[in-house]
Image (cartoon, rainbow, N blue to C red):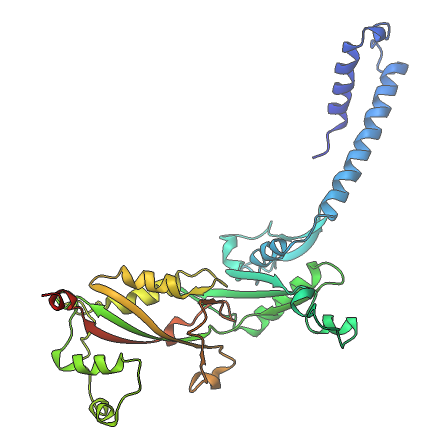
Length: 351
């Protein structure tokens, strides 16, 4: 922050006292030549510092994190008080755009609809193959989204991450970013429904803790096999109805440790964070009554539009150790988890 004229004058006078050669200069009159020169120099320095300060504010480098901060600070809507007609205005102040919330009442946070945001970009090396001569002209690389800032945003409804599904909210946010962004930058903004996820696990459980119907054990064992089933084995699976209590705690039938562990883990993945197979297995391993969890298959698909939610074509990503959902998060409400519960009896095999 720039110093005041008085502060600069005091520093000049303090420095003068240190110079014995200037003791002959008297300060008795405010209109004396010495005082006038001190005032002129202090004023000139003050003007210089104000210019430097303003330039520093205006020239602040806009990093990817800066875009994220601005997105999370976006205010939408008008006050909910019936007697107020003031709207939230975006003003230019001290070298940047800021929301003027002076006249607003109540909790300002209620107007910040962007609760989750991730910002990224594609560098040129990810598009250009260094071992191959480029066939396109240089401008084509920018058409392929090189030099584009990608912003994923989401809000929260209830206790769940959700896309911004009110058209005007997303439109207003895009207009806001268009106004504050750096000149010449291309910004691509998305807010999508959560990706769908389908998991298959073989979980060896403690039959003294987790309930399993003895009539269903053979079914789970056949389903857990990695080899193709014979026709006879296939017939055993057809029309077999599983006990709905399988996988629940014996003392708490309403609690399903494996299912709960999977959902809790997915909820705790940060927005635009990676799904890591090992981390999921670790989370299930800690569930009550679980001995050995084995993640056998992972399938996922992005939610393009409501019609695709009924019968989407899933992609098998089992061989990938980690990946980031396109929307930045998974839709937990339509999560599909198939668990084959197998009694852990290895201690008997050693006898």
